[in-house]
Image (cartoon, rainbow, N blue to C red; front, side, top):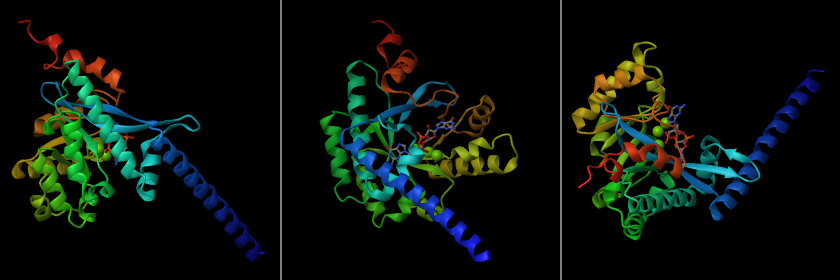
Length: 287
Ligand code: C2E
Ligand code: MG
Ligand code: MG
Ligand code: MG
């Protein structure tokens, strides 16, 4: 009897396993198709100055609306893209769509100062990635300062000659930031060697503001670290006024989160931010 129960448990287990594995295979197949036929699109989430509330930039985020599956969240398709290698083509698509959108906005007088794009370790491992980046900037006639790349700590440590690649990117004038900072294990000495300008404070710490001392202490430490290394900070996942108050008081310059705006499609983003952007003709003094 014990044996039969064990067997049942085993069968249940393998059935669940294969259902998950099947779903994975299916998603991968659909994703491959979606990338090839450019079904993915880029949305933009505002980054705002913590003191003035002005738009200082945006983050580009991949969105996938599959005709067959409906909306698929990045948390479901990004890991599959990473494991299958599709992330290179996906990242490429999002990077190009971002540059194209930035150029198009510029022709209408809407200059978003700087847009960051998430970059995977697999992209950084491509020897010609910095060249490719330079070619994109050239093709869309964008200044390098219009672009920033977000890289996670674990990613940086996983690439052999990451520092060389990052230096080459930095030499172009493209900014680099460390995403989800505080969740990885990079040492101070290592951080000092990296040509990054921005630390993004992970949403998990922001969530803890007002709920006990630990997260607040971690945020203070990250901001202090950034200040002493000459870097700036962006707080992710900010939803509440009290979080902004805390971050501003502690010296975090830039806020990103639902409090100001969710990620929006390009049309909605321009509608929401155009009139608030001092660089846009609408609010400039008429000469
Ligand atoms: P991330 O780069 O840390 O992006 C921030 C995530 O936090 C986004 O989730 C954003 O929608 C969400 N977020 C922003 N503000 C708030 C807030 O106030 N509250 C809450 N609850 N969430 C907020 P999203 O778009 O689902 O993306 C998840 C992750 O997928 C990203 O995390 C990034 O690691 C990855 N990802 C998205 N697009 C790309 C891409 O084009 N390439 C690569 N390699 N990764 C991507
Ligand atoms: Mg990011
Ligand atoms: Mg992040
Ligand atoms: Mg995050």
